[in-house]
Image (tube, helix red, strand yellow):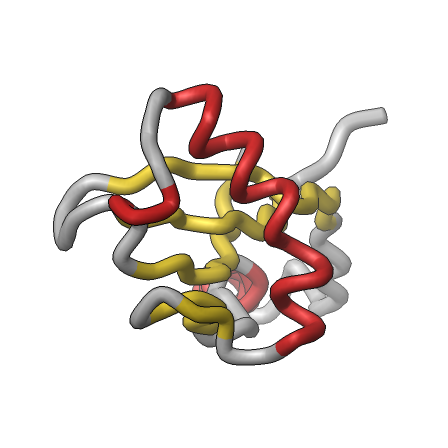
Length: 109
C-alpha cells in the first residue's frame, strides 16, 4: 500500500569528521490527514503548512558513541553488533570510528 511520506531512522557511523557510513534502523510510512474546507481562501497555505509540519523531524540527533565509548550501556547492547557488522562490511575498524549519531529523516515518496 502506498504512503505520502517516509520517516526513517539511521545510524551515522563517522570514521572521520566528514565521511560516515549509514545504517537504516527503521522505516515508517506516513499519511497526510489534512482536514480543512477546500473552499476557504487560505486552503493552499494551510495545506502547505500542514505538509511542512509533517515533514519536519521530531527526533533530535542523538550521539550514542563518542571518545571510544558508548554513552549508555543500553545503546551499547542495542547497537554494538549492528555497528560492528557495518564496520566489517566496509573494511573499517573500531579504532577508526570517531562517533555514531542516531538521526531521523522525513521525505515525501
